[in-house]
Amino acid sequence: MASHYQHLSFEERRKIAKWREGKMPVPEIADRLSRPASTIYRELKRNTYQDAELPQYSGYYAVTAQDKYERRRAVHRKLVVHPEVKAAVEDALKAGWSPEQIAGRMRLEQHRIRVSHETIYRFAYSKLGLAEAFYRHLPEHRRRRRPRNHRRHQRSHIQDSQSLCHRPSAVAERQEFGHWECDLMMFRKENGKVNVTSLVERVSRFTVVMRNEDRHSEPIMEALIAGLAPLPAEARQSITFDRGTEFSAWRRLKDGIGAASWFCDPQAPWQKGTVENTNGRLRKHLPRSTEPTALTNRYLRSICQSLNSTPRKCLGYRTPAEVFESNLMALRNRLE
Image 1 (cartoon, rainbow, N blue to C red):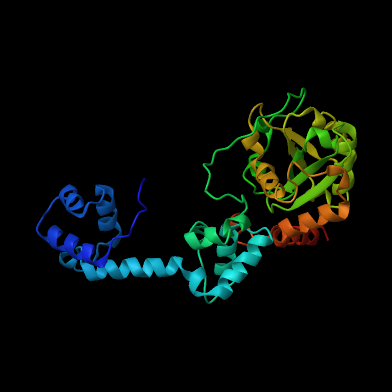
Image 2 (image 1 turned 45 degrees about the vertical axis):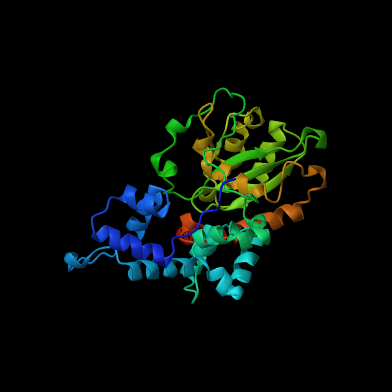
């Protein structure tokens, strides 16, 4: 049975310092301490003292190395030492914030005691955090961090559409407000045809969610028109879709609210990554097992309010609602 990893002790660090002073090779040090060579290399890299002004004093010193190690450990134990901070982090996670959003907002608001997103993850996956099932509050609810680059298959092809390659660079680079991305969220087949439209403004990441009774394209487009019509025309300039047949009636948008439509290339969902990422957040509230016929507009609005009041790293830890309102106000001021 494999033994659990044990951190280097101060006595081991004293031996490493003595042997390094004697020019002993790292593999031999590792062998004498019955440690992997990688452990010694990592120790030297992380805890060697560096003096830029007097480089002759740089080197590995046991006391300095132990102090750096203990200070680093203390940082990652903030959630243990400060239960009030842990409680605040836990409340934010339960509200749907990610560890990165929590840490970023703490920096933005200049909290006296702040934690990094890595500290939150480390606590969640520590022995204490696992014992408390703290990981259940994380966005993915996983006991372990999973590999990234997980992709979903793109859906069916759609004809006579405008490709993203013709979309202006100002839109592609998020320099212009009023351009949206759209997708459909489906549920288990046995729960019927009801689905949900997710709509996200690209600059602000402001999210709108609407219920659909089926996947017929005309009612979906009419719902988009009704949802966006109250906004100024400059705030609803275009919508980017994938090539699912539920978006085949896209011409109605131009006739109804003057909005242009752009379509991703086949098998390229990353081209509308904003709404894809938003769907991942929405799944916390709307898992595939959801009974969609029971979804009310009031509940869907509450989900949107939660997402739109959550700070985002890409927005400088402002919320989508704050950025959306700021752009909308600037737009209205220009029109007056």
